[in-house]
Image 1: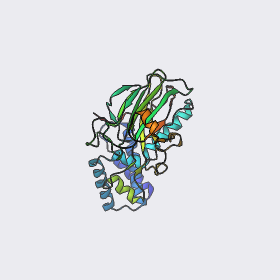
Image 2 (image 1 turned 90 degrees about the vertical axis):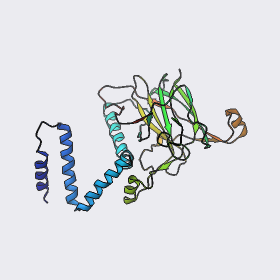
Image 3 (image 1 turned 60 degrees about the vertical axis):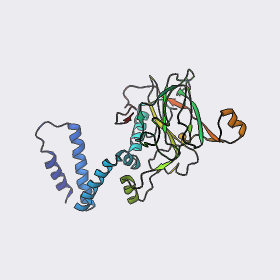
Image 4 (image 1 turned 120 degrees about the vertical axis):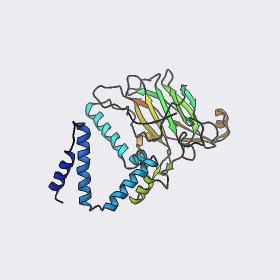
Length: 304
């Protein structure tokens, strides 16, 4: 078909409303329909292929993998890039910690701890991790009472709540920073993981010639009154997928040094019975500014 014929067909289809529509929704759907018809025409998409795609979308919903595919196609990262640009345009103060994607595995309601926390339930014999840092503004002034929400996978790459073999809120805590803006926690070193090998996300990635692996990482929300909320994650130094993250979440500023300790005196000082690792990572928050899109994304999330 000629492009003008496609446009006329879409106009006829989208002009059949019987009441006043939501103009924003209508404009977006109209554009998506026009683009879809053009894709079908440009690539000579066959009816069997189209119905296969609809079946695929049904499977995505049944397996609850829409958010996983969104990350894998770089859509989550794209929204981050757009927000970075909007902040730069209005002159958000420089020096803040970079954002990166939230991912689909946050669970609201984690226990709140003051200053420090133990994240793990002591059932995972993975490498012990001690992590600490400070929350400041972009000028280095401490932010007391900031909330550092942290969550990560276990040594098998699985997250509590979604993995029913783990205890409630295992490897999930909310830590309120002390008077100097400091937080610290003990946990275990997380493992990277991949998309379910039999799931629809990996099925599409296979067709694209891509892997579905994520490097080991730790997620954070960092918030405080008068500041823009930070959504970010750090990657674990040395992971082989650190620059090949299928979700495009890696940023160089979010790869802190990891120090591994095996000396017996260090183990005694920490009161542990096996080797451990330490990470120090500081968060810098920009002050809140009116007229800039919020970093608080209203989206469905799990809660326990």
